[in-house]
Length: 481
Image (cartoon, helix red, strand yellow):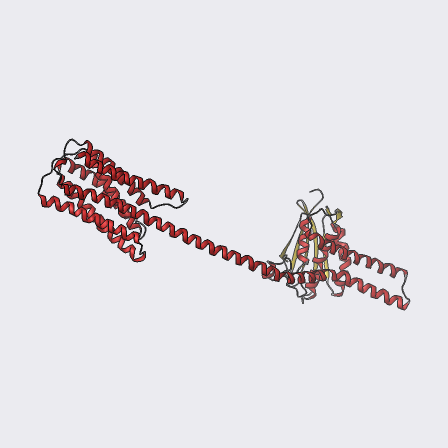
C-alpha cells in the first residue's frame, strides 16, 4: 500500500515536472516574454513537495501517528505552492500589495512550527482537518478572484482554472467528510480508506490540471500580445510608406518653389555689381555722345567696370563652391586693407543715404583666405547694414566696423543702429532660402556668408548691438594658427 501511494505521488510529480520544463523552454524561446513569477514558483514548489511526500510515504516506518520530519517539509511546501497559486490569481486583478506579501510570508513562518507540533503530538485526522481547512479558504478566495477577472477578460482558460479549483475544493471537503463520517482512528497507512486515497490523488490530479490551464492562459496572452504586435507593426509599416510617399510629394512640389527662390536670391546677389556696371556704361555712353570724355574719366570708368565684373565673377564662383568640398585658392590678406577696399565700393551708397561710418581697425595679424570670397562676405554684411539704416529714422545713422586680434585669429564686428532683427527671425537668420526681416530678402546672402566663413575655418554669428540695432561677428583664423 505504501509503495503504491508513493508511486502515485511520484507519477504526479513527474507530470508536473514535465509541465514545468516544457513551459520554461517555451518561454525561453520567446525571447523577452516572461511568465508570472507566482505561477512558475508555485509549480516548481509543488513538484518538490510531491517528490518529498512520495519519498516520505515510501520510507515511513512510524505509521501515520508520528510520521517523520520530511512530512512537515512536504506539507509546508504544499502550503507555499497554494499561497503562490493564489497570489497568481490575485495578481490578475492588480499588483500584489507589500502588506499582502508580508502577510503570507508571516503565515508560512507560522505554518511550519504549527504543523511540526501537530506531527509530533497530533493525530492523522487532526493534521488532515487542519490542511483541508486552510486550502479550502485558499480555493474559495481563488475562485472569487478568478470570477472578478472573468468580468473584464472572458477567457475560456480562466473558466478551466476556476473549474479545476472548484473541483479541488469539492474533493478536499470530501476528504474531510470521509474522516468525520467514518469515525476511524488511523494509525497506519494500511488503515487509510480507499475512498480517502482516491479523493487525495484525484485532488492532486485536478491541481495539475489547474497548472496546465494557467499555462494555457499565459500562452494565450502571449499569442494575443504577439498578434497585436504584428498588427501594430503592419500599421507602422503602412504609416512609414505613407510618410515616404508624402515626403516624396512634398520634395517634388517644393523643387520648383525652391528653384525659383534660389534663382531670385542669386539674381539679387548679382544685381549689385551688374547694376553698378549698367550705371557706369550709361555714364560712358553719355560722355561719348557729348564728346566730353577725358582720358582720366575713361580710365576711371573702365577700372570700375572691371571691378564690377570681377565682383560678379566672384559671386558666381562662390555659388559654385556651395556644392564643392575641394580646396579653395587662398592668399595672404591684410584684413584692414580688405575692409578699406570694400568701403570704397560701398562709398557711393553710404554717401547717398547720408550715413556715418565709424572705423576701429586694430588687428595686426594676416589671414590666409580667398580674397574674393571674404570680400563678398564683408560687402554683404555692409550692404545689409546700409539697407537697414536706410529704413531707420534714427539720427545719426551709424555704421560701425571694428577689427581686433583675438586668441587664434581675427574678429570683425559689423554693426548698425537700425531696427535690428526680430527675435523670431534670428532663429532662421542663416538658413538657406529662409527669407529675411527685410522686404527685399537675403535668403541666400547670409547663408552664403556663413558658408564661406566656415570654409575658411571661422564662424559668423549674430547678436543685438549694444546700443540697439544689429551686429554681426566674424571670426577668421590668422596665419600663425
